[in-house]
Length: 400
Image (cartoon, rainbow, N blue to C red; front, side):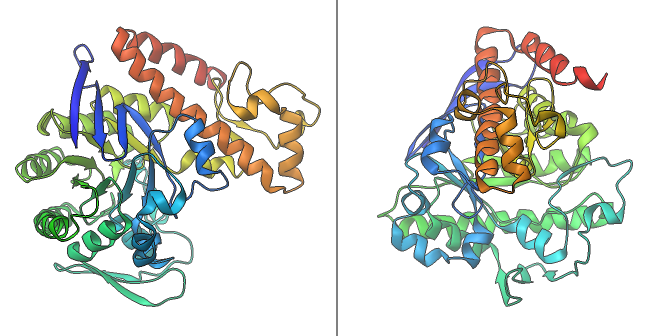
């Protein structure tokens, strides 16, 4: 298990590298598709591999509730369970415990100037999670049963799931929390990080028949520079294999916040930016030193008929596409674009056929995976800033 630096982006924190795991290498920067319940929704694992994905990320909270980590452990780990031979990630479950239990919408990057209570609280949701210094007690969103996650439980669940890269259990705050609460939460997350490391080391020894799992600490601190830098420095002193950058982010300050964190984190360990997947945000993250990314957005918007293209998002369900027999996107080599037309996808979505979601997801995941792969190539050959300017100029051309 290792991380090897390759090329540094001139004058910035961005870089290329290689994360080596028990199930293969991940050249970075890289986008990691989200397979929440051990599946990227509507797409075969084999197809995800064909799209160029180097790893997938599953969710510890959801797999804990269903089918249960014991079943996945008995199958040989999440990769064996879902027939995925490459590297795997699992998040700690902390975000889902708090977002689903407390009722937060699944939004991490927000506009701090305009965010209101209604922006982060999902409609008709009650606060069903209770946080204390030892852990979180919460109700299952599936059946209302009561559960408790502590740092130790999160480590136990993630070891049973068996991903190559796992995350320490942390408290995910929102931009609505007060400065005083953010400080208290940061101390709590640091204490939990220490407990996660201790439990991780114990389980690694007990489960020596399983491949080693890399443990990443999660940097919180919301939009506060001093808190972000402190969290990064404090976690850097602990025995983590890498780091996640999490918590609520002011979207307008994404690059600044990621830069604060990565100026403090050790350069010889990988950094994962949690929950970020929009093209402009990915450029910002890469430029400011993030190595890997995950986000549900490519698959989620695909299921509503929204398609990524080099000229921006396209709503394929619009009447204008009913008689359009051109590819979903010109010159795109993905399976969807080389075999199907806009008219056909328009028909599938209007007819509410499941194949529409499959074909749209194939294209969207390919679009984002290949976008970040091209960023890697552009850093290596010295053309990153030219590539960024050209791509974003085309992507937002229709909004000018």
